[in-house]
Image (tube, rainbow, N blue to C red; front, side, top):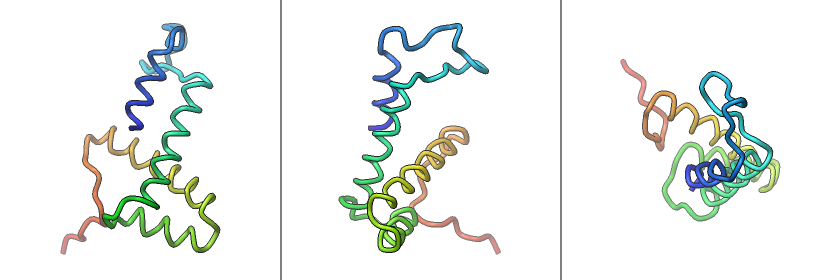
Length: 104
C-alpha cells in the first residue's frame, strides 16, 4: 500500500524534476510527503487494530497505546515503520516478525 502511494504520488505531473535531484534521488514535494505520511499512519493503524499476527512492532505499539493513547501510538508506530521500511529497502531484506535470534 505504501509503495503504491509513493508511486502514485511520483506520477503526479511536475513532481519529479531533474533539477530537484539530490544524490541521484528525487526530492519529494509537499504533496508526496503528505501522501506517504498518511499511508504510513494508515498502515500503523491497520497493524495495531486489524492484523492478528504477532510481531514485536505490534507488541510495542499496543504497549505504547495503553501508556500514551492510541493516536500517539499510531504516530509512533508509523515513524518506526518508516525507519524499518527504509532499512529493509537499503539492505534488501524481508520483514522479521520477531527479534532476531542471538548467535551463541
